[in-house]
Amino acid sequence: MTAYHPLPRRRVLSGVVAAMLALPLALGACSSDDGAADDGKIELSFFWWGGEARAQLTEQALALYTQKHPEVTFKKTWQANQGYFDKLATLTAGNDAPDIFQIDDNYLAEYATRNVTADLSEYTKSGKIDVSKFQKGLVDYSTVDGKVAGVAMGENTQGLVYNKAKLDAAGVAVPTTGQSWQEHIAWAKDAAAKAKIAGTMDPSADYKAFWVWLRQQGKEFYNGSELGFTQADVQAWFELWKGARDGQSTPTADVIHEGNATDVTKQLVVTNKALTSWVWANQLPELQKNTKDDLAVIAYPGDASKQWARASMYFSIYRGSKNKDVAADVLNFLANDPEAGKILGTDRGLPSNLDIRSQVAASTDNEAMKETIKVMDELGKNFGPAPTVPPKGHSTVRSELIKAAEEAQYGRATPAQAAEQFFAASQAAIKR
Image (cartoon, rainbow, N blue to C red; front, top):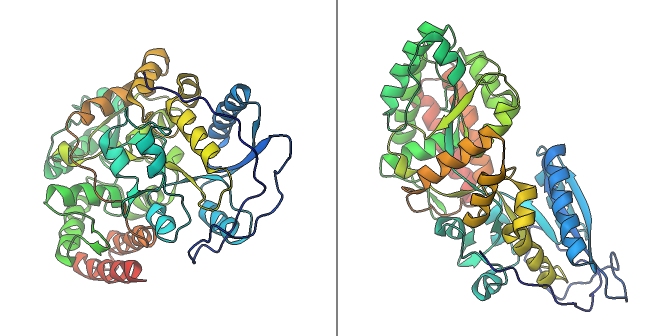
């Protein structure tokens, strides 16, 4: 079992240092008195996104930390995903930056290269943040320019979720890991004809599907701060899915748009508009909550070893925090304490600590969660090396892929025209 390091008492330092997101932070910046006290009490500000269920679990885990360390309390703030990063940028720029904040791979490199995130290397090297039970890819996927920018709070990988109940009722064999992309599309056409529901959501607007497909072609989404693919690669991807739409393996463009635009709770696999959805594997339990049909998850088509241990999200520490040592201990606790792991479960992904993950799997009565852990553990045996963390501009690249793919999906552009649009917009986004 991973060792958990007790927190020593520390003299509290006042305030939270803030600096503009777009500029390098100065550690000597002025601080405020928010949360300061002379009695050894420490208040850490803690900011994350998610729904009410995640909020409750996070608050319970933080309360457990305070129970074990009464000198530390938390100023907790959370909100829905939409608008979260706008708020984080405002907080960072407005002298009210949180000591600890949740972040994902869309923004990790951007915040790290702008010196917003503390370098946690000293803590991971010393074991004060113990990552010895993490898959190596999770640590690699949190490193930017040689510095550890965040601690992975969950492991994830790409997952194709399918409606097992409807396939069984229609007498259709379920999809299997190892099918080629063309075999999956052919399967979806046959399934659609028999089940009277579109066989597969069209993932041509989905960056994670495109990324896996690229890796199977010997390419990457990014090579450092450059695109790792060509315009011709994008065109081939769009043509693959135009063929699937023309062959009626997928829903209509309007329905595909619903899948592109909605959150996980309303993906087509649970709204009965497609037999599959392209998601993150850890989202299976949340999807299952929204349908009475039995769902299951497998790897994306093609060579499953081209998938990787992806950090579903991270917690980072603000570089200007006056309580970085305490904040680091909190992150170690959330990642490695068995009681905290039991509380947090798989809400942010499968526990990064493999021992904690085994405990969660053994103790949960949630069948979807058990299925997710089983699939992830199986896929993890063959994970390839993690790619580099996406560079700044990645969130814009994701949005541009949706725009260009929908131009092709609606027939307003040919695959070649849509590919040209996306490639040019992507180059511009990462060069800013």
